[in-house]
Image 1 (cartoon, helix red, strand yellow):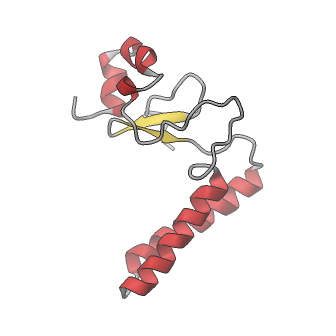
Image 2: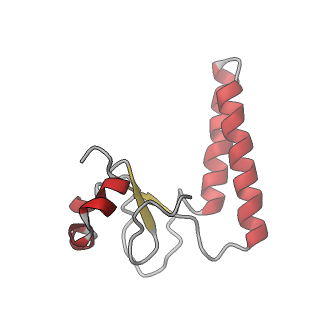
Length: 114
């Protein structure tokens, strides 16, 4: 992930296209993370190159499985009871004060439509 995107103070999300996106589970070993990323990239290529809907559907399931292994989907990887805010606008979440405190330049990196 590019470090240009704003990252929440708790390091759970980054902001892109005006939405919060869950980051990978930081407890994964480098080998686990790399294997999941390799699987994710292969699955995304398979989606792109799928000759028909059935193959595309199977490839999308592989994308989902890899993202779950990374902790970016499915149950949250933190254990403090905080809800999952994925795909929400940061200014409409518990991160609103953090978002408001960012510079306009930082906000623009996470929300280019601003």
